[in-house]
Length: 339
Image (cartoon, rainbow, N blue to C red; front, side, top):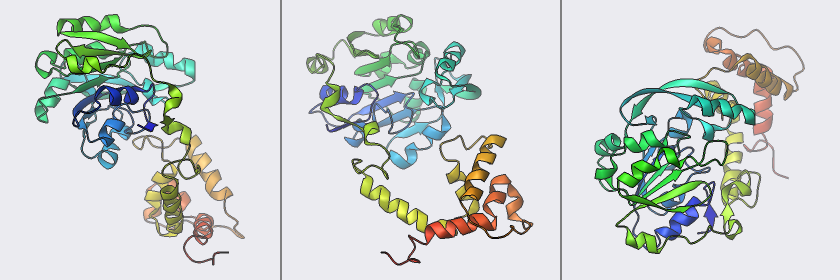
């Protein structure tokens, strides 16, 4: 493989382990973003499919567009159905957790958190619901709730060939496998490798995979890494640079025709759409919009009607902002002749 998407070369090692086999099925618990730092995205591109469980809605919703063969469930996984608090960590979304102590630990990295009540489902129940009877890979990255996920996985019946579990305490490299490893031992699995972050468990009868198990961690420089390519539209090194540039040109040409509500969502992309913008975000957006426009006079009073729907719509309705959008688009929509 040429390009790795995972945080710790997990996808490189999985490609080696399953080399020569037909596409399989995964259950990815705590899947995160469908591409960035994702352990199973390379498998998906190789023809695999499966069940992904991700409690952060803004990431779970992306799977339908990026990985439509997968079944994506926005929920927590646990030992039994119910409800629990997810402590969603700001900015460092990979540290979001059901363990309050770990969420508080994110403060050391300058990140706060907020609680959110979510449903808890079991891996076993979800597999039954979606007709998944055979699993090649069960991957678990849940920031301290690994034992609960395994308790509800029905390992005796599901029998995944490989169980890959993040095995260090969030925010540190302190070993954490003592809390969940006895469950795997009892189900007939043995730890065959620790890659510095995850422990790899094979069911005892899995001799074919055991023979292909990596003997050492791959060389980090042997593959390219998605993060290192930079933003697609800015970096000629990015594999999708040409497409991204074409999309940017098309989007900028369409600016004056875009609905104000859509523009508002786009301008706040990257934040949780369920949370209204706070005063600081609105002020920053106002400064960006109004500071970008040369306008010779005063904006007329805002009209009654749809622009009263909210503060972002009001900002976008102003003449100075619409003028800025028109000036930007003029270089892409055919208004200005190319030099």
